[in-house]
Image (cartoon, rainbow, N blue to C red; front, side):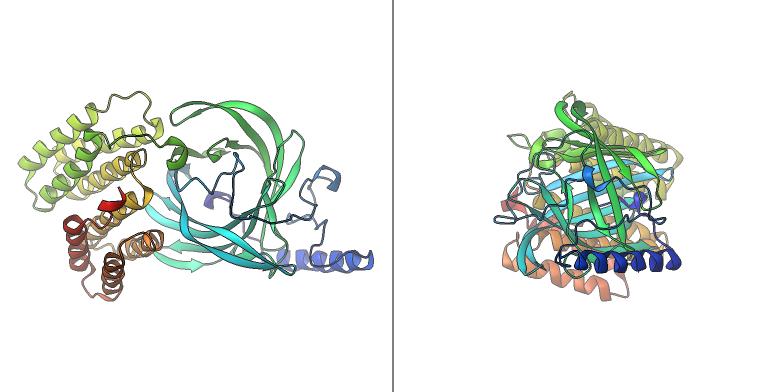
Length: 452
């Protein structure tokens, strides 16, 4: 899936022109004796219809065979074992964050007479702390080890509400599936990671293999770098995939999206380090002190937060997460000195967010996601206190997507309780009060205790 910063919409005229090109290609292909259900090769999907690699360079024109499609083991796109991944960076000069989560269920895509079972992955992107895009992605691995993209449902948010669903597509209904990763990438190989003419397009060319990159826990050999052709015809040389991580780094100057932590690959044995757990608790205590504007108590809370951060001396902890944590701790201290309630509350939430990211090293992702429900319930209360209606809507939306992640993992009674409280939240005339009660229930019941 293209990150939100890379999505480039087509004008109506351009889309009509591309659809016309597709129609001509269908007729030509059918006359040549090929089945129109597969249609290799497809036309160039740039807005000008030019700039694509020759068909002789492409490795995605052979029809994939799917025998065990949800057994996704390709090391450069191991979505089947990466239960939770966080990317951090900057887009349009603002802080970027994305969370990619393997959902606890599969789906079926009907394509060319086949019923292909697909893994479902939820992608949530935030820009400047607010939800920007959600996508439900469908992946399957072919028998040769290549991984294929069979569609996505896209929801783009503006001011906390879904504004457009541009980029939604489904293999079989809208066109062919797209290769997201070859079985054995080699320099010069070309494939289209998105290939629905007039809707989405992305063509990748393998540039280098066996590259060593800096990962969350140290050096990672065997990475692959690629050049990326966008729908606007611009080629960007800045996409990296790494073994055990998949999409690792995307550069589109000045934008950068870098992998910060991946549960499956970076998981460590043993309990969560005490300072990490203390950071979460200290952040919530600090937030309550700020709500009461008890700045003397808040100053003591800021000292506790700083002490817990100082106790994290493990040099192998993910550096990007630590960078975010350090920034949040500094902001928390400055806001406390300035007695700025809004800034202090925002910093406390970011401290807790970074600490929960660190918990992915030792806890099950669903347990962390339940804690993230509490996180976003607190963020909703902060938005409501500030009179930020779009912010309230945004946090209600995030809570709904989090419920989709944890569904199927919790005890039935806890799952029913969570769903009921979220329904109440969506309908409540006082979402701050309802969110406070949701947060209190989470802290007292702790529905993910058995999953930690």
